[in-house]
Image (cartoon, rainbow, N blue to C red; front, side):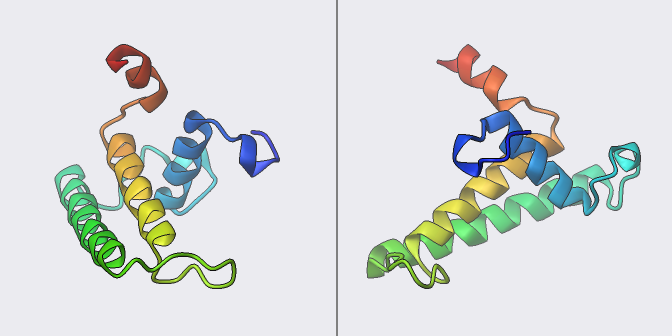
Length: 104
């Protein structure tokens, strides 16, 4: 993986989020499931809906990142929505880069 976060590909972001969700960098443990697939999928979708609500609220209030504190800003909530969309794709084994080119 590249060391410069500004040059990360979607595939690399997907990989990092997968590792975060698994709670380990050890790929040999990927076969182990901490939660049944259905429960994990529901958890991820509920988190996505929650984050979307927070995004809507911050857009309504026009709370922007001022360069100091990202907490409770549009930028933070856009990232959170992005995170959970990718986590859902990972849960279903979807390669978003591949789908991007198919869909586009």
